[in-house]
Structure formats: C-alpha cells, structure tokens
Image 1 (cartoon, rainbow, N blue to C red):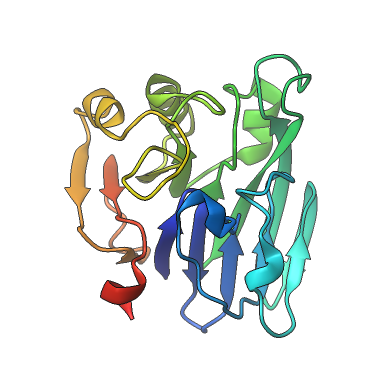
Image 2: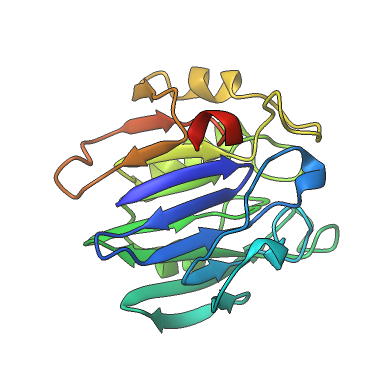
Length: 219
C-alpha cells in the first residue's frame, strides 16, 4: 500500500489493486497544493473547509461523511464517532475517525480528534496497524495525547499530521514536540511525501515522518 501526504489531514491511500481512498482534502487557502484528482473513495471527518474540499475531485467518487460501516470496491471502512473538542462537541462539533481495511492492514485516520476517546469508543476501533494522528493541538489533541493514544491502540506505525509546516497558513504546534514525546520509538524521517508499506514491512513502534506534497518536486 502507498500512503501519500498532501499536507494537513489529507492522504491518498492506494492499495495493491490500485483502489484509492482520499482523506480530508484541504482547501488551498490553507497553503497546501492538492491537485485535481480521481479517488474511488473520499472520507470527510467533519465539515470544516480545511477537511472537506471535494471540489478537487474528478470522475465518480463515493463520498463518506458519517459514522457507519461501508464496503466500496473491496475496501471495508468503519467510521467511529468522536469529538472535535473537550466540551462534548459544544465548541467544534463531532468528528469521525475512519478505519480502512486495505492490503490485510488496518489504517486509522483520526481526523480532527479533540480528546482521547473513551473505552467504549476505543473498543469500537479495535486493532490498528497504522495510525494517522493529529499532533498540532489548538484544534485537536496535542503531541502528548497523540503519544498516549498510540500507547492505548498500539499501532505498529504512527504517521503524524495536522501540525505546523512552512506551507500551512494556520497556527498549530510544530512537529518537534511530538518527536520528543516519541523518542522511545524508531523515528524515520523519509524526506518524501509518499511511503510504501506492506504487512511484512510494518515493524514495531515506528514513526514515519512524511513531508507535504510539492507540485514542482513530486510531479
């Protein structure tokens, strides 16, 4: 499976059959370049415009915006309801975490998770191989909470997202505090926007650092 980071919470997941899932496409006003593209499936964790820019889509796409169970092109997806804040959703509403079963792995996209989920929600999530998790605080959990969530769910690979980068026109915390919080893990800075991961290459306690897609560099 290939995981390509377009910045913020937007990833393109491509399985070995060529089926694609796009997560939380970001409006370009936030600084990230996401070119027009086709994806078989798009998941939207919540309806904020740094996560729901479906105007980039071309062709027929199945758009999933809510919790539930879905099966599209052989990809089984589970959406689990969570909160976007620590106030019962009163500040920023609800958030959906999505789990994708692809290439015999389970990938969790946390969306804009605002607090550590309760035990009932954790049980719904179940076993996870790869976790895409926000670390930038302010609107989501922070670096320490992301590390706590990893300790609870025990994914083999963690990929941080939704943090301050030079391109992002939004104030969030940077990557460095999370790197410090995860210093007991094996940290791989790939200097690439894309990683290829298989069931055999997952390893244990790994953190993969991707860089955001750059149109000039990556086309």
